[in-house]
Image (cartoon, rainbow, N blue to C red; front, side, top):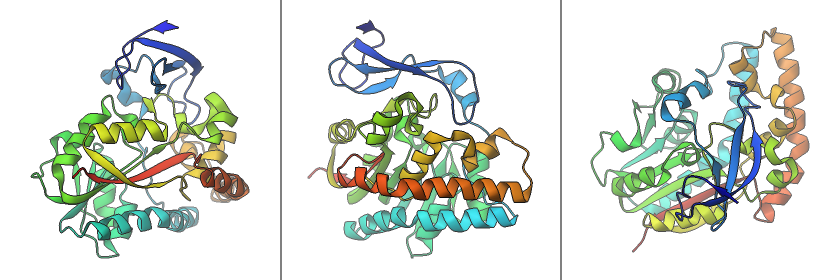
Amino acid sequence: MRRAEPCPACGNPGSRLLFTARDRLYQTTSDQFQIVACQQCGLSRLSPPPPPEELGRYYPDEYWHAAGETLAGWLEERYRRLVLLDHVRFVERAFRDSEERGLLLDVGCGGGLLLRLLKERGIPVLGLDFSLAAATVAWRANGVPTICGTLSQAPLPPGSCAAVSMFHVLEHLYDPAVYLRVAFDLLRPQGRLIVQVPNADCWQFLLFGESWNGLDVPRHLFHFRASDLETLLEACGFTVLRRKFFSLRDNPAGFATSLVPGLDPMARRVRRNPESTPGRLARNLLYLSLVLAALPFTLMEAACRAGSTIMIEARKKG
């Protein structure tokens, strides 16, 4: 048993080492990082986490998606619109069911394509991202209003949002509860919170171990199981309404990236690998073939509530 910093979930100081891992995806560093699990509650995390002054260097300049102007870029954009449809439907249902008036705030919106698709369905949207470059892409390329900043400093009054979404945000934070409490204050009484994180209780984690793409070392500071996420939401004043263990965008692609991270389109762009247009198309098609081959497995694990992502809709208690 290791003695390290106390578990942020239960406060227990004891933890066990699961393994060491490195940045397989973007190769921003050659350093090795330890992933531990709490001896009491089982929450796994990076230990020790990188200090805030170092964390920024692990986030590449193009950590979000921006459509290119080539044929390959156009095809990537069509693909992303297709695989985002289940995200769109999940968020739209939550927004409509709340019957509240107000904005849908997407925290960590990146290039804003999801918000663009929601806006096209008549939902008033607002993006928030800490990256000025990402916020600029959201404004200029996808036409959605976007604020550059953090949720804890967002210039919005309490009760101004009908919904708040956070897709793959909580695992990046030193204290995820801070964002959840701010979201609680921003939401109207029947407003909806939509969150998605990698699911550390998935079959892919059992299969790939430290090579599982959902770990995304060292950018992911926490590795939530569904039970961990639900406990955190309850502690921050939310009641879980709905769960989804499959994402067409994330689950099959995560499997393919775990197998061959160097084929991942965003990883290739971030690593700045020189590619001709035919070469880029060929690699994209090979990657797509792996994604399609992974689809039956990822559907099966999701049906068993062991999908590699967990998407949750929640509302305020009472």
